[in-house]
Structure formats: structure tokens, C-alpha cells
Figure 1 (spheres, rainbow, N blue to C red):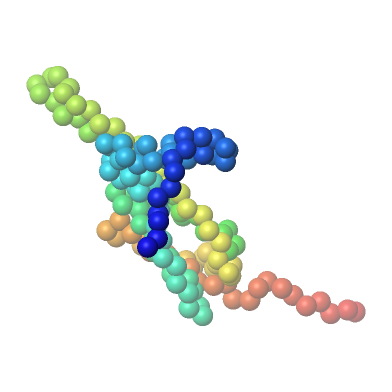
Figure 2: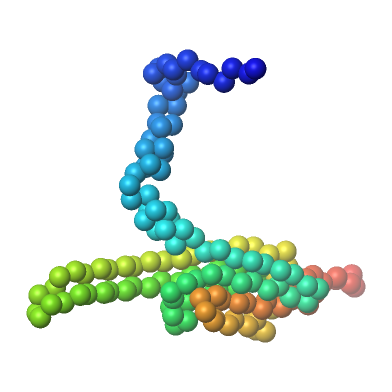
Length: 149
């Protein structure tokens, strides 16, 4: 039989110099935690990246954004995806505003790939909250061998 009981000491966290370890637990147990978790999850841009001999394919989730609000930058092997939106919802009864909800959000993700990208031939599509990028690899590495004359 294994004894899993530990003696409680209110000073353990202080002795180990970890006085705030229970702080996260307090918010995790907070009654609004599902709402807070949804807010945190909404702030991340999830992506998939696949590679072939010729190109990279990137699929990034940017839900609720308009394609006009999404910006993609390519610089060598560095790719950045950003999206920003502002939404205003008002519920009125007559001329009195009963409720007003405002949301302003920004998603941003930047990453490096193993090869430089041929930005002139890159393609971006947006459908159902997903940006799909086709990023062809640049032919050659730009290196040049010099001949001594």
C-alpha cells in the first residue's frame, strides 16, 4: 500500500520562493473561466505548414476576419501574417441603448522557413476563416562563384 498523503504546510511556497503558485489556480477556478479561456484561445493563430520539393503550403486560422483585414508579408524566408478587426454590436429599444458590445482584436504570427520564398509567385487564398498560402521556393540560393582573372 502506497501512502500518498502529504502534510500541509502554509509556508512551503514561501520557503521555495514560489509565493504565487496558487495564483493561477485561483483564476482557473474563477466562475468566468470558460469565457476567459475562449478569449485566450481566440488570440492565437493556429497553423499547419507542409513542404514539397517546390513549395511550402501554410494554412492559418483567422476566424471572423474579412480578407481585406488580413495582411501577409514575405521577406526572404520570413513570413508574417497579421489580421485586425473591430466589431461593434448595439441592442436598442427605441432610442435607448440597452447593451453595447465592442470588440477589437489583432492576430499576428511570424515564422521562418528553411528556404527563401519566391514572393513574385506566392499565392494567398481565404475561405471559411482559413488563409491558405502557397509559397514557392526560390530557385537557387543566390550564391555566385567568382572566377579569378
